[in-house]
Length: 137
Image (cartoon, rainbow, N blue to C red; front, side, top):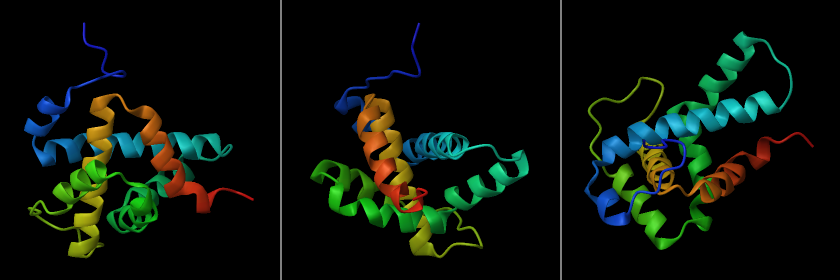
């Protein structure tokens, strides 16, 4: 039985996966991390949690947060991000510019790639760096 919470896909298999497939998975990985981060910040109404989640997972927010981790990325991670960013989008949401949407897709691709490797430590490190300015003092 496959353990979908503890994957360790080899790099040659990862390279063959579609960029949009990685972004599709990475989008959900990022959203689960945001939801957990919000829940751990303290009690809140479901409506407030939903509104906050939507704000954090929007393309403009993801694009802005992605910039925070650029100095931390390895060359290989940067290549994966760039591969996702350079994928031609089929459509762009009204609330985002083309650049924001492409940067968000790059971030999601990176998160999907790291997740499939089972590299949760690196996911946590990058996510923490993205969210640290929003931590309560």
